[in-house]
Length: 331
Image (cartoon, rainbow, N blue to C red; front, side):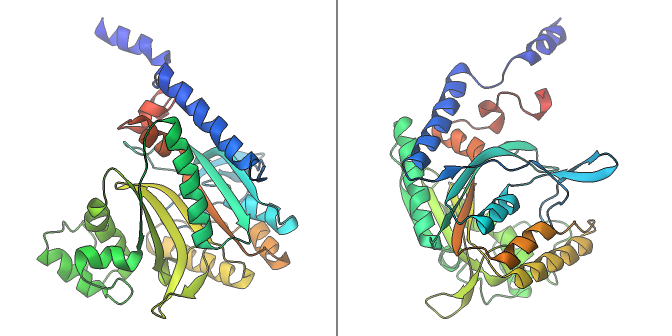
């Protein structure tokens, strides 16, 4: 009998009526925020001929008329193509999809806010993101606080080593000496970025204030992805990218965008090599994006914000299922 009752209830939304209304207010407020700043809302396709080359992500694949196609992991590439043809500040609220992401903070289908600001550097876009978060928090009657840490500062605060100079072997020794669990398959000979990612999650992020927002910026140059590389104040080459966290939870990822088509193509090919080394199939490189960069992308910064996770912060929800109408298990 209890199984029948549970099954019968699966048609209902998982989010409460209050959460559904809070989501509606959040979306309405975001659109008002950008409308007041003359940032234009756009739409781009969710389905593409190309998948992501990011070795840490996998696209969901489908077929149309016997052609392989992919649901986007973010609208970034298509939005940059719009920017190349029309250098206007733009934003988009859309669904994005990532394979094999399921857990308290993950759903394979999720809602992204992404926007691009021609003429903005990374710091100016971080400031605008903070303004957006402050505005949304006022709706939920919370007073947000923000910390700003360079990637180097964050690591040195916890590990005492410089992440821009450390080796894989030194990371391995740090883990052994400090009781950091070492996952199966990660060795002293592995790429240093794999070690930095692991220590970040195991030691650096847990040290962040769990009740406030933290901007982490100036990542190692080897983690540049789609960001420009430039020297920091210590004359060390760093990736001009940032992430926003609430406690340990990542909410946003932003770049001072790379505009060099040849460099971007090289990075995509390197990412495909890393995918193959990890036992994954190489991805289809988006030729349309490379063509747009060749035509000319304006100097700009862009950021993607996970709205489901942000709503978790605003509402105090502990699991992403609590802020979704229907999670994967009920979709």
